[in-house]
Image (cartoon, rainbow, N blue to C red; front, side, top):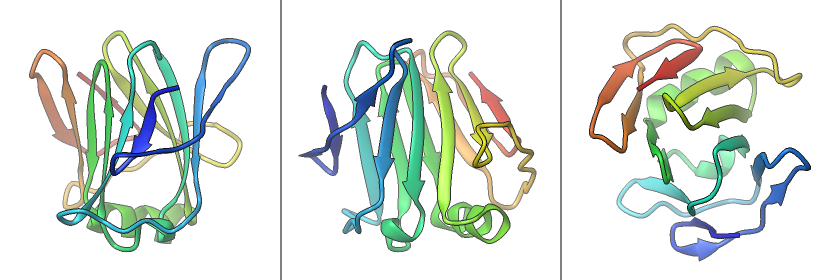
Length: 136
């Protein structure tokens, strides 16, 4: 698996249906104010379980073969206050869809225009908004 956090390889799990599960709970030091998770090619369905406190007040950037998700530290702080420390996301190839999930993997709404997430598809299309489901 080609998964790294700030250029350091990390372990991940692949389920029987091919979903890549990334769980990050240890503390990470930001580089230029961000924690960057790079996912290699070959994964069309990705789920994250990321400890927001482990990001130590940095922005989160998840880069896949089909696009990039950027979540500013202010948005992460809001998500932590509303939904707890673990950030559960589902990223899917196709129209590049990102969903915010609860602890039971059910979609939950997030609507704070002052603290958006930014989604950029590989074609350069960009969407900056809040919502439980983002698409490019």
